[in-house]
Image (cartoon, rainbow, N blue to C red; front, side, top):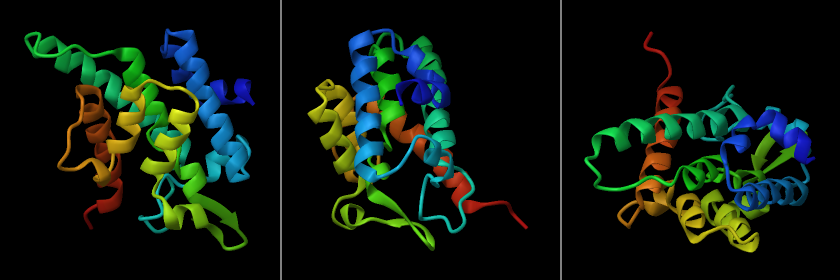
Amino acid sequence: MRDKLFNIFPEFELIHDESLRDKALSVWEEAIQRGGWTVEDLEHIPFTLLIPNCTVNIVAHTRSVTRVSLEAAKILEQHNCGAYKIDYDLLVCGGLLHDVGKILEYEKTASGVVKSRCGKLLRHPFSGAGLAMKHGLPDEVVHMIAVHAMEGDGGYRCPEAVIVHHADFMNFEPIKLGPVD
């Protein structure tokens, strides 16, 4: 399974700390197993159920959020006059794991992908953060997962979490709005 995850998420190679990379991959592996999915299924899971007939899958969304986060961080760090320092390993890890809880939040049925029982009880920031904690990821990564969506509004977000949060919504909002007719 790990080789397949590397193939669909080549951004894992951008995490230089091998222990961190290994733990992040373990989170994806457990989410897939617990959710009853396969790695191949990920290409057919919409990244959101809030957009009817969403054509963007969880893989494309996760990769885009990770890449946008990485590029934004580079530019921000160049111009922030030393106000903060970005930990790029943690940032990439947070981007790759921000929506991993959706693998538990969703389930496949005869009528398509729908909210699972777990998803009705826990939104993905909670289930994803729980998996990350279980696998020993640093508090900063757990934090990024937990606060990337509305659950983090009004509270503290570390610089990496701010970047992942905004990258996520930069990917969501234009798709939600759709083209102007």
